Length: 309
Image 1 (cartoon, rainbow, N blue to C red):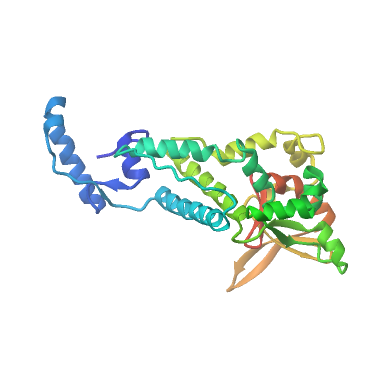
Image 2: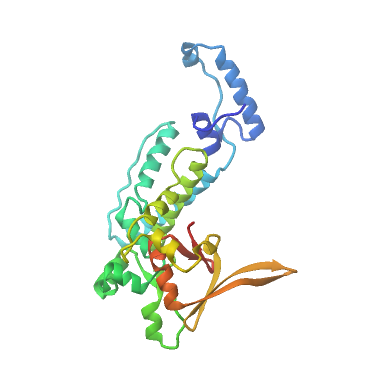
């Protein structure tokens, strides 16, 4: 028995991982038998019949894993606010009965509204994920780094730290030109993780044709918006004398004495070799990547620099 995408049965089985038996083969056999039984019955008879079949989970799907991680992130955010008592957290109990499709639909609609394309607050949090301090000063003003603003953000769990600097001998210059981002474990970091997990869910659902891939939609929208320099990000990336496409799959990045080195690593004859090494002056690197980092279209993870392509 094959269930096509877009059907409720497909959603329950392949997306949520809910079946009539724990083992996939047995589940398919039971479904076939159930369908054959229902074919011989009228709607009135189906309504009166007690089929004696219980629902059992037979698989842990990618979506269910993502939902579980999403729940963990939200709990950590709520726990912070309840502990600090800076916001009165209200828990709303919704009763959907067995209508999991409706429950999931409502959750997804609310989750998508949190994404940076639609929500100025999460856009602000995302812009602080990994952005050079000089560019943040251009976009938000030096007040962002004043003690009153920093204390206010810290009160709500938004704490910034240095992620990368040019590696110069003058510490004040390193601080001035540093790339900063959210501290690990901070609410800002958790909100950013929440946004990324919602993106993951829409990406997976998009494979089945249920919803748009929200991250791709965001990237497309931002490519066509004007940045601070007065032209679109797409124009910057296509007209700059620089190959951004090299970074689609990520490149290792190292910074030392005002020079940024990026490269690929390949495993050859039982050892890693560096290939396609590129060096860029740090200030030139800021010119090329600041708008992308600010918009969340470029990011650094596990020592590698990525660009959304």
